[in-house]
Image 1 (cartoon, rainbow over the protein chains, first blue to last red):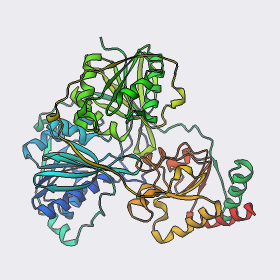
Image 2: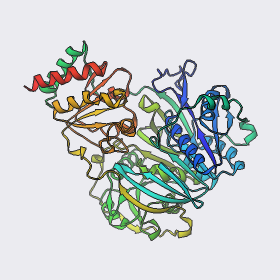
Image 3: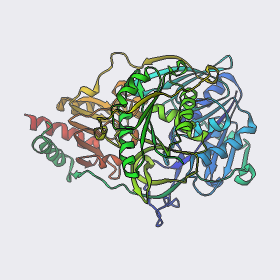
Image 4: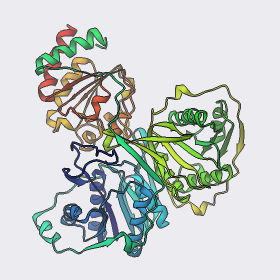
Length: 256
Length: 330
């Protein structure tokens, strides 16, 4: 099975984000980055399918190549076989542009399966995988919790709202966007880390891919949301705060 | 000339879903602001019945498509049907509620028109005769204003987060024209084969009935520490709930999950312990009357929703709170 895994870096979850003076993005200078949460699960899904059916997992990512090296190494150390990196310094804020770049890099690979995370923790558009499927002419499914490959078809468990689920069947090749919690995420072994260094990494430029970077949406500005609720932050040590809170819940809010 | 807001009103077997009504309310509000007429699209099994109830709102037109190829939701089917209706109606905007279904096929539909799907909007502004859409980024920590770069001949596709516009705002008392959209879908074009649909946890607890809920998140760090929170729940007479990661790790069963993939609740008191307030969780509890947040990170988005906030170590605060609650309750 030839599996492509699309992976993205996002600022560390608990990062203190500072908006730049022009209000266009966050100051990335002092930020640390990590692999997007659902992408971890997508990678895990890909590695498990490779273990069961043989083949290769190719990880693809876009961004500043130097910054991506850490994330790529992590994926290769866990068991991905090779990596494709689309070098791009600025964050790409338009999912159609992102998907077009990925499609251009993925098409020549002729994969059996393309996996992405469900959504990114930065922009949160939650659609790159679906857009990619349409561009590649492949069927897709989102919110994927389980993937089985049987006789050239994919049997997939999808999450629905309110605790419901469904099983569907799709022909291969297909694009699947993987939900967090798919399966426990593995750690890279020391052996894996050593082997990662020898695995092929191919860097590509946007120019080489021949993709028009025309945007269909524009992000005007970003800002810290203005709160509509009046929050009382209670001060003091645990015992004092607890006492204040219990009293307020009883006498002020009247909920206990 | 593209004009009007076409709203995809989601329904299940003849009954319009709450997020479907919300999308329509958003369309009415924005349509009034932009002076654009409103129409609706209803798809799937028993769509005609749902279309009748949609026609009772103050809009111009409702189209329905009940083709057998649409009786089970599939992205190929719903995308093809909507595409045909959009091509005929030529709206300026296509709205939907940001449901799992919308996430699954609207990006495909938008791409077919060479556009971007403006997903999960929490609000909007009208500036110079055009709508600017507000989306959350970085898990709710930062908001962003987005505009469409218009392309003539194609509409702008937008979805609204659950609760972004209240369905209370829906203007009723209408009698819109209802018509079969007359879409043609070949069975062969549908690549998804739906095998079965089922409920995950049998005999699950109905958290929507709880008056008080104590909800625990990643901050609890380990399953073994849960008793601290269980004690608080007991003292408050509350049901225990959790954010997704706690359920994913198996520390609490899936039916205790609150959020976009779990239950949506609106109790009179919601105590969020060690929960950061990611969007997927917030949409499941933002209707709560009184919210208490206990978190060691003062910048956690959960505090934006809290009536009372405690920035501190939950391992100290929660046991102290349990004792204080017991005392105050007598």
